[in-house]
Image 1: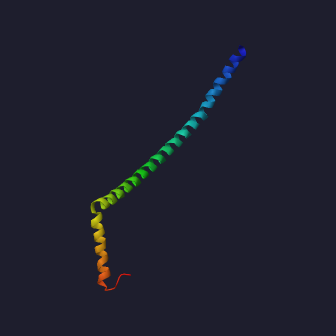
Image 2: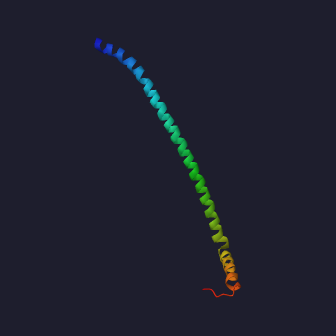
Image 3: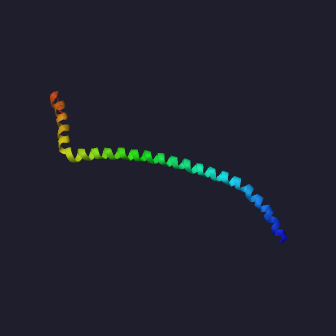
Length: 92
């Protein structure tokens, strides 16, 4: 019984000494997590901005296709016609 009591008095200071490296390790892990969180948030913001730009482009394309599809085709053909007939050359 006396042998166990003497080991307790040795283990208490060892436990107190080992707490300092454990605290430093926890601080390092916390910094790593903060850094990783910031990087993830930045990437997420970039992806959100990119997605928003793509959605805007798709909206424009949808509007062109649905609202003025036939009208746009006629305008393109009207732009081609003067070039072909204006020079007097035959289209090849």
